[in-house]
Every structure is written in C-alpha cells, then in structure tokens.
Length: 299
Image: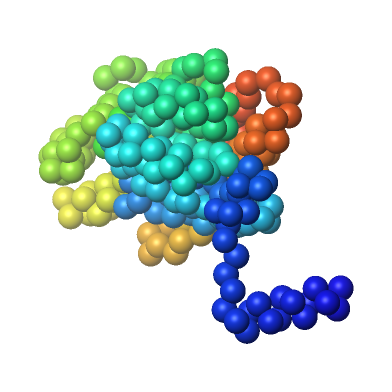
C-alpha cells in the first residue's frame, strides 16, 4: 500500500492523467453513460441530469449529457455521438419519432433504458411515472377545491405523457360528473397562441387549470395575471414535475411529483444489469405519482 500511494503521489506531481480510452480497451468498458434529454430550457431536465449524475457517480460512472430538444434529427445525432464515445449504456428521453434512434442503439447492442416515456414496443426497457394517475390526481385536486370548469393545457405534444396525463384528467372529471362542455383541452399551441387561448378560457368561466408541466404552468400564470386574472381566486392552477422541490420559484405551485429519484434508481439498476449481461426480462416499470399542494389550488 505504501508503494502504491507513493506511485500515485509521483504521478500527480508529474501531471499524469489516466487514459480511459486505453483502459477501456483492456476492460471493454468506458465507465461512461449517455444521457439524452429533451429541451434544456425546461428546468425539469436540469433536475433530472443532476440526479442522474449523483446516482451514476456513486457507481463510479461519468455522464455524457446530450440535448435532443424533442427533434428526431437532433436525437439521432445525440445517439450517434453517444455511441461514438463508446458509452456503456444510454438513458434516453425519446421524442415522438424516437423509434429510429432506438433502432440505431439496438443495432450496436448498446444497453439502453427509455425514461419517462414509452414508444409502445415490448422490446424496450422503460421506467416512468404513472402518468395516468398523475393527471387524475391533478384534476381531482382542482375538483376537490370546488372548481367545476376545468382546462388542460399542453404546449408540446409529448409522446406517451400527453396522452396519459389527459386520460387521467378525464377520469377525474368523469368521477365528478363534469360535463363535456366544461372540459377544455388545448394541445400543441404555439407560444404566441397561448395568451388568446387563456383569455378565451377566462371569459368562458374556466376556474381550474391543469398544465402539462411546471414551467408551462408558471408561464400560464404570468399570462393570466397580465389578463387581469387572480391566482388562485379566479383560476386555480396545478402543474406537473415538482421542480420547485429543487429550484426556488417565487410563485408556489401545486404540482405532481413524478418520483424522479426513484425512477432514476430503477433505470440505472436495469441499465447496469444489462451492461453486465445479467438475465432479465424486458422491464416496464411505473413509479408512483404524488400530489404536492402549495395552495395555488385555492384550498
């Protein structure tokens, strides 16, 4: 041990840096994971990246973090970049057109896990929040606060998540006998179109708003306040992602916690088992959705 410590000390003094590329030729592994995310303008992905980094580093892994911005071409470039760096495995938040990128990963035999979203294949390991239950909890929270004219707002139509959060939204409305004319849904509007939609809903008496994610919810709140609406007195708002647990925002927001750390722990466990060639059936895991009330619901 003393000799080992002396060698390491001299190596540091001489400025030696370990050549991981050379080490990987011997071990067959680079101890690097690829993490391919959506739009980094959404702080949710910053929270995820930080949590993945912390969890992976505990196993001696480093991260190559790439941004695909929900764009299939950028997603494919990100996959090719990760593969070219010989990553041991990939965590991918797939876009709606992500099947080609996944097929490219499969061609190389590189282990991968889809995060938060499913592309409908029984060959993909997927770990995600129970999106249906999350949408249900969000809408039920508004309804239990006495709101009876609800709206669901989703700026970008995200594969799997949009569909299932909306499904949960309608399930709660059904449970409370909310008629179809009192359920408003907008998916895929441009940023420029949102103020007019919010103004229309306000004039129609919408008093409860479930927004696809926290960042979009804060933007909606700002837009409603510009229009003269008071939150939550006039319109109650619930978001999704619970990024306020990690990032301080001046507007407290009721939200759905998607169990990010639990999702990451399970995804890494699956990925490491694949990397080490352990026998494992295809994994499709849902972690719980939990409501967090910060009183933007009016309760």
